[in-house]
Figure 1 (tube, one colour):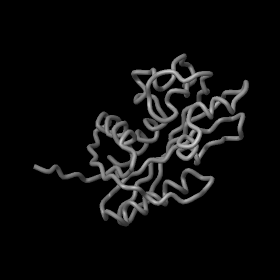
Figure 2: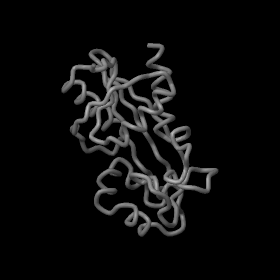
Figure 3: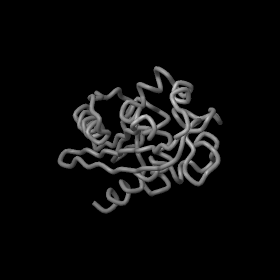
Length: 182
């Protein structure tokens, strides 16, 4: 029997959905998954990109949706790759990022959760400060093998509790408080 959902996570990235589902399940929200390549506008603002993606997802599926867009912002290279993180990861990967850096390795991950239904378009931001490791460590996806959260010695890829402290967790927690009380 097919399960009916009130809310759907829309993305072409199954990893993002799986992480988000685990986090939202722990916060009392059950979500479905709609795999789709959403239009990604070019902007220096993650929030602008996320809001456009959420509108695009709702227009395609006509169901309440959330999308997640995130970026890795590295201080010593003026916040690069920021909203271009996906493209940068596909083109130069973690090794390319490591080759760009010298001494200042401070960075932050930012996640935007955007919700859209027939009448509401709302966004929620989560940020996590950290630094870029000197070498890749662990078997994770995306930039997880090179991002070390502040007050930790291990990368996201090496941590068992990433979903309890990540930028995505922080944004989803804000979203869940709002969603469960709207």
